[in-house]
Image (cartoon, rainbow, N blue to C red; front, side, top):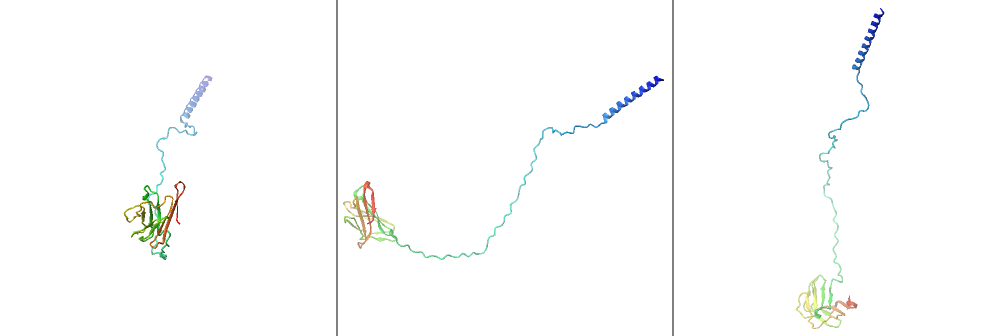
Length: 208
């Protein structure tokens, strides 16, 4: 009787162990797997071109504010005209001696140059040109136009509209100092020009 009891007890224990083993296996088979919930580590390399946000483009022509042009006639007062006055004659608006060429490569190539600086033609007929020594040249029938010059040469030559000739065989104008006097047909003084040559050949000009 005792042996039978031991056999039954052993059988129950064995059946219990088998049940426990089966239950454990079932638990393992049906227990949900729980993974580590830590911070996921990205794997792999991102591919493709990043998408850019398009910049909006303004299209169309901007509206301009129209410019308003005033209409009608604007009255502008006309300034009163000031009558033009004729300027008073200045000392240079006359017939005068421009220069005296008293030294030349050839002694008789000296001359006196006269200018008509007036606004009209001047008749020089019977006018006179003199030096300090009393040598006198009398103008023939001759006129000089406005703004024109005439040269009175010491030498012989044929008169033209710009050149007159004294007809002298010797020099007239001294090399160091002299004066030229221009007088009209009434022997009234018109103009005079003097010169003097000092040290180093420097010439000084003056009017008497």
